[in-house]
Image 1 (cartoon, rainbow over the protein chains, first blue to last red):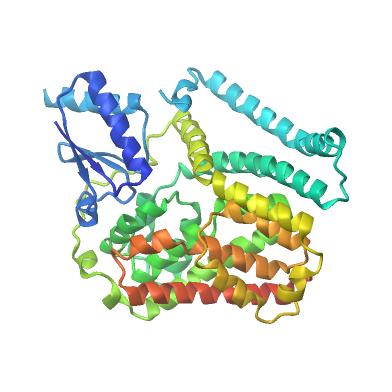
Image 2 (image 1 turned 30 degrees about the vertical axis):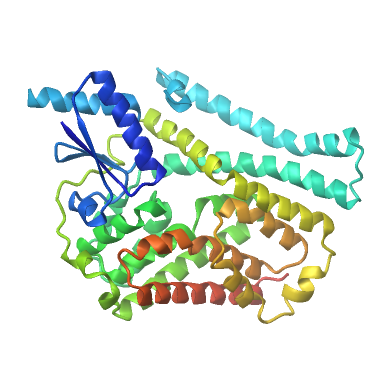
Length: 83
Length: 351
């Protein structure tokens, strides 16, 4: 699973990464993290409000920092679809 | 788990009881604030209300708590209400609208859409790439910080409905007119070319969709914590300055230099305000104290708008998509609008 955090370094992006790493650890998923700070790349995902969360090239969330539980739910539903 | 996550209610009843209890607690604190500090400063500590030290100290504590409470209430309410809107929805509404109507809609939407300055660049690219005219996009970018919900709440609490409506009205008009003028000037050549070459990905996620009431309330609580943590130094400095002015500045000190008699007062106030970086909450105590000392409302509103509308960090960010001539024009047109509004209000509002 390749997880990308979209955002240019404001606190929201940092928090999103923290929350996502926690969720990934809770679920025991093997995931690679990448930070995308380049604006043309961010808008390529059609994300207008940072921070954005992209999992395996699919945008799953943007605009706010969710709870760890919410990210867990999101990741779980993604992994169950692919298996 | 953050505090906000831990407090999440498990049933609707608990949720609304929790909200109701918080509201009552807030009201109680608000009502008890003034008597409390009057008692502490004047009775307990024995300072005299007529003395500069006494009135300055009382102002500092009373105002800090009052503003903190107001901010908590306003930020929570506004965040919950705004959770129903998003930049994505705004773009969908604005796409394809021509200038004129588009400017008016963009300004209105700029006020109610939750928008962080850090998202100014992706939002700008997103709007323009989706076909929203440049001037309309700029109306949105001007209205959003200019008509600031914190400023609205604090103005209303301190000065009543009149100045508040003036502020909102003026902010909207400035955003519409400035955006329209900038659009008419056909400044597309000063937008970084890659913006127009951007192709949108096509999988739009709307952050305002699918939120539950618990989500919205949690967002409100988190936003209160976030903003307070970020601005409390500005707030204290602003209140301290306000307290000093309140207690120590001679009654006619400011009116002599910046009062209704000085025709350059508004211009100077705006020129000072533009490079200043503060948020509405930090500036408000200063505005209140200066108003008490006789500065006209128009000059004060212009000063406040100049401070909050144009922030250096946002302008630096926008450099990624706007070339310097456009940024300069943007600042000049918005600044001119604010100056005009200041003079207009001074002319129509009795001091």
